[in-house]
Length: 361
Image 1 (cartoon, rainbow, N blue to C red):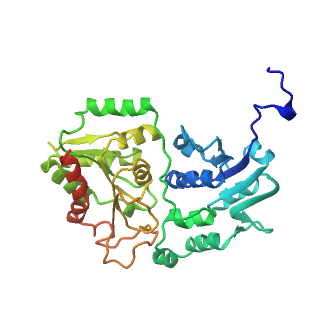
Image 2: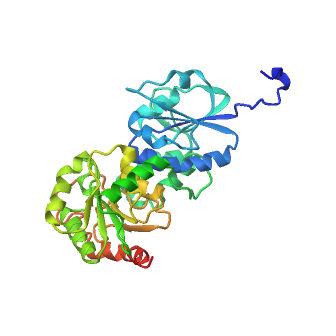
Image 3: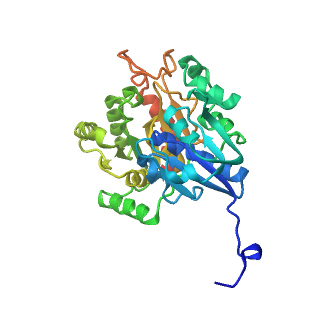
């Protein structure tokens, strides 16, 4: 339009260094893996970043300033663009066979590299570095998981050849209208307490490991105690927590208890969670949303690794210190189990500094 010729066009901008990140599931894991994006951009300043994931995680990337193009895979198929357009770097931080197979199908430029995991000549998952092998072996051994004291951010950051420690939070960007809708909802159910704290309790943790969530009795006792202290509680959960929310409401009549609902979209759930002053949760998606929003997080752990979770200096990790079966990555019928062993007094003690800060505002 301006009459320039391509060889000397002053408006030409090179495509830059093309990076593909492949991380499919679970949604919480995808969110915490976005914490590597700022470091990737710092290391490869002129890079273009494409991310391949599942449709369930797609809402996490709306407004993400670090991802140029989001690609979705349906039934394990690789989008044609990723197979045809060559990349300089393919980052595969997950040893899941489907994830690795998809990453392997992404085209590389001449001299391009794969980092993390790939497939060997027999189609088996193969770590591509000592750091990747370390993470791979941890996935095969509960004992290695128990012995580990490094966070996911540092373990996988090393695997991705990024400078550690990784101090960037997960990236989750809410639109102004989403924030406004959440605030309007809160006003409609009684509003923010004056001179007190709005405490979010994420009531569930998915169905894979029931002991990832605190007990119904513990959550009930916490609601009653916070109510006596003058604070309000927001119940946060999904469709699997409908009955639990009903049980909590019935067990706490007269308490300042706000149910955020069980049928919110992923982003509406995130927007309502973003309103709380402090969050009590198990090791689940809500935890990573809390850290993304820089909320103080009281994280209660059972069968999964507390060492791997990064709270960014804002919150407390609570777990049964007298059980040698923690980090078992299984379910059991032991009583008291790992969550039953976390007392109300310990949760209140962890909350106290944050409740006090809010009360003095």
